[in-house]
Structure formats: C-alpha cells, structure tokens
Image 1: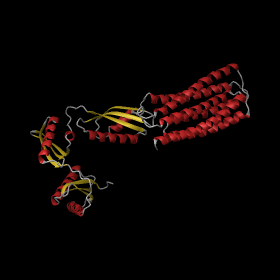
Image 2: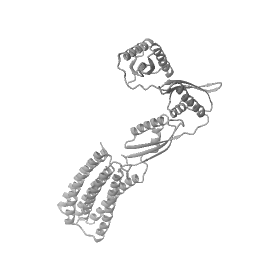
Image 3: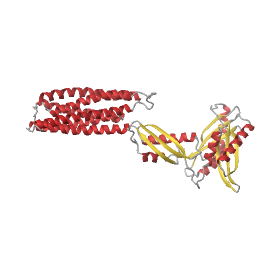
Image 4: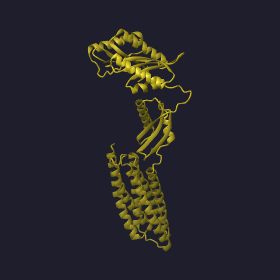
Length: 462
C-alpha cells in the first residue's frame, strides 16, 4: 500500500465518521434543548467536538500523506500526530465547559423535563457509537494510524458517555433531578480521561520519547556477525514510522563494504522483530584494542587490499621462529603486466607491514581477478563442463555433483563452479580438502579452466 493510498483510505474512514457525528449531534442538541437535559446537551457537545475533530484529522492526515520535500526531509508524518493532539485538546476544552455548566445546574437545582424522545435518542446513539468504534478501531489497527487510534479511543469514551446519560435519564424520571447534573460531571470525567491519554500519547511522539526498548534492539543487533558492541541505541516516532539509529563498534580494519553488509543484516533482523521501522541508521566506530586479543589478520589484509583496489582470499596466518607469517592469494586487474602487478602487490605488502608490526614474512600469490559476465553457451564450453563433472564424479562418486556452471574469461579460457553434497557432520577442514583436491585435479586435466570453484553443502541443504 502506497503512502498516498493509505491516507486516502484513512480519510474515507473520517468522512463516514463525520457524516454520522453530524447527524447525531443535530438530533441530540434538538432533543436536549427541548427537554432541558444537561446530560444530553453534554453528550451533544461531545458529538459536535467529534465532528470538529474529524474535520481537523481529515485536514492533517491529508497533509501527512505528502511525500518528503526540501522543507520536510523526514516527511510529513508528524502532522498526523499533531492531529491526534488537537483532538485531545478539543476534548479537554469541552470537558472544562461542561464542568462549569454542571456546577451551575447543581447549585440552581433546575430539573429537566424528559420525554420518550430522550430515551430513543440515547438508544440510537449507543448503537451508532458501537458501530463507529468497531469501524475506527479496525481501521486504526489496519493502517497503524495515531489519529484513528485517538478517534477510536474517543468513540469508546462516547459509548460510556451514552450509558451514563441513559442511566441519568432513568434516575431523573424516578424523581432525582439533581442526578442529571451529576451525570454530566461523570461525562466530563470520562471525556477528560480520554483526552488526557490522547494528548499524552501524541506529546510523547512529538517530544521524541523512545519508541523501542533499547535493550531489545541491542540484543538483536549484537547477534550479527562482525558486531563487537552496541554503544548507543536511539529511537523516535510513532508506532508505524519509527526512526532508529545506533552506534556500533566493529574491528578497526573492517572495510566499508563489510560495514555495509553488517548494516544490511542488522536492518533485516530488526525489521523481522519490530513492525513500523521506516529508517535504521548505523554509525560504525572502531573498537578499542584490548591487550592480549589476537588481531583478525584476514580482515586487516582485506582492508589494506581494498585501499589499493585489490582482492585477497585464502589468507593463512602462522607463527614461525622468525615471527608472524602471512600467506594469501592477491587478485589484480587482468589487463596489468607482470611488472605492474608486482609493483602494486609490493605496495600492498608494505602497507601490511605497517599495519601489523610483528609481521616477519608475507607470501603473496598473484592472480588475475576474473570478471566473467556472460554464460558461454558454445559447444566447447559445455564439453569442458561435462569433462570437469566426470572428473569430480570419478574422484568422489558418492557426493552428488550438481549445478555445474561455466563462464568465459577470455577467448581461450574459462571459469567453472560446481556444487557437491557432503555429510552434515563432516568437519569443515575435511570439506575444504575435498574441494581443493577436485579443483587441483580438474585444472590439471583441463588446462583451459583457469579457475575452478567447488562449493560443498550438507546433503539435506535446500
């Protein structure tokens, strides 16, 4: 549902409510003036304010449905909150006026003259209020609208008001005329309570009270791999338009691409747990180094490689008598010469030594970065793929080899990938050795395959 469509449907609910309230307040005012029932006039005033509140809400929600612009970069959603507050303010004003009239009636002792029309109007009002309450409550839940929630709360109050007025009419008819003014005060109390709750809820949004529990957000965000600590959580906004921002500590060498992946996963997990999240901002901070902690050498290598436009994989760290040794594969642009590739990789090695003070030795295996884009449908490519598949099945016949894909690297060479099933309980190192064995054998038997990648997965994997 688009934003514009949402507010069009909300305004349709208000149009129905406004028409109904207009009819009811006209009938209540007429009967109340004719009979002099203060309780009924109080109910009529409440209905008139409902109609005015509907008009205000219709106007505000129409504005709230506008998209973000230069003056309102976060959108116009707060106008709906403002509409809810104005509805509550009108109810408080009406409550004050009714208090004054009720006190005056109690002092004067004036008794209203009731007719059958009073009772008939209240029975009809009770039924109408129940229907409107159900209608608005369901709409508020469907559209998660603050203004509709305020209107539904007001309508629930109207149901209690109708009950109070009806009881007062019965008691007055039995001869206790002062109960009419007392019932009006009860109406005031009910209206005031509803108004106070509406204003309080709207004000909490306008003054940016926390919309989500910070502890719950932190517990979910810290489950994302790569996150070391959540430093701060802030949230604001109504239930259907929550804005959340967090300060997250990650390892200092974490690259921007890695940070973007972490932020994306955090957003996905948080939206799975919290409805109404419209914006999640993640601010990354470097974690403080702790003496004794082992650095993530692969992460450091990738960060330094990113700075030079290189790619690295299979980073292996080992401690030798001379100190720390790192071995890795470094991917460079395939169009470079051997001399150019050697020069930029030497720069990369120098940066590694600066980043890792105890690094004694770096072994880099330079290889071109493959950028295969189009699937080669030629007969030769398919023939090579079949040969590779047969080689893998000959080596490990029970591993269900599948999803064999081949792409062209240049006019005479190809990159191939295959999947195979292994037992779920197989150690990861054993699965890696299996993949390496097939990759080396296939490349040895089929020289045109410059790159072979084997993906191992458990046999029950979908």
